[in-house]
Image: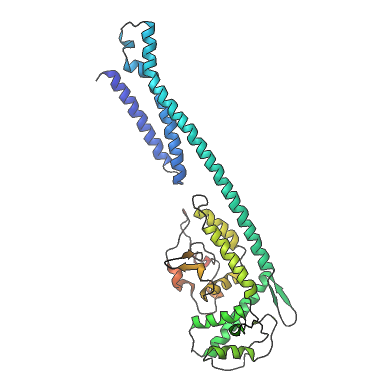
Length: 357
């Protein structure tokens, strides 16, 4: 092997080393997919330039032009064309491929931007509808005092708490906390006559009444034989709460189900923070009890056929705390919340609840 070939091999090795160093630096890019795309483009450009660079020196290394041998003009032209042509041709093919590849990336980017714009448009429309649904909620007391919107949810929370405490007191340990909650939520959600499909009741139990609940019939009888309190109390709230929860669930599901190649998990969390910011602590508490009582089980579901982790992976009740709960529940002890949580990349502390931060 002569000195010219050794120099050629040496130059190629230097180019390879430079390529590997740059690729190693580019490998530190956080987004792997974007890194791969950029690497392929970079590799193509570098290879194309390398072949052009090699073609410039190929007559020297692959012929005897500079070895002292006299060649006529035709031989010189043929030699240069024969040695440089293949390398220039390869470079041309590489650059042509890169042109198509870059066009494809540009088209994909335009397509993705269109999908994101469509996604955001629908998300903010659903967010607007949720706010309108909440603003339409009315809670009316016997003196015609009306609470609307978020303020109405405070009254709804108080009503559920009130029902729970009285059933708890009257049960005299005959029912566990979970059974008391389910019976309380049934009355709260459908009304005192829900068992007979009659959804109107304007009565509540008095604090001084004693009794022992031994059957469901006794519970309904107890709540209907006492003095009127207000129009909304025990009349049932399923007509608007079911609609609000259903729409809220579909909004979260819409975001969570989006392809993470288009909307990353980190971006999904950002959108759902915006949605969660519309929920007061009372709304989040009622949403939690809706799930715990078995009415909204799809919010956190780990069945073999269906898996939804909207409370845990997407932190939809992040602002809830133990002080808001009246059924002796400790959030840290809820079995469904003990699973391994999905976390945002680059975030050291990403707890399920705000009070754990």
